[in-house]
Length: 107
Image 1 (cartoon, one colour):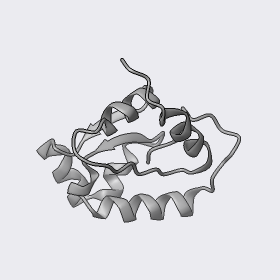
Image 2 (cartoon, helix red, strand yellow):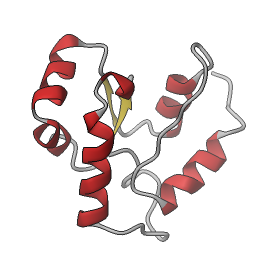
Image 3 (cartoon, one colour):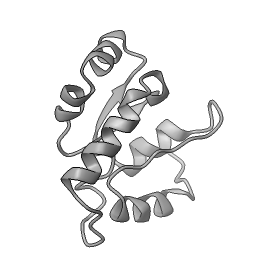
Image 4 (tube, helix red, strand yellow):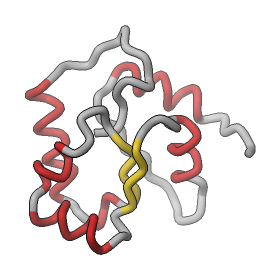
């Protein structure tokens, strides 16, 4: 697999912020980059109808399944997740610049 030049920057940001959003054009390698950068995180595709339905109907319960964070692919399909994750991350914790990128990144 080709190492992405953006990966070190993404890992640095993950040390400083509890939630990251990666955007870009279709087929540009966003999913591959995230899966390579955060191999210990669960990967959840919101293209999956069951996952999308649960996330839509109960965004808090959906996010509670991933207390250590996850890579959420196609998050634009469930817009309420963005505000729910932002609310839970700001009320539950503050950025920790000393933590490792594998401990918490995508929530």
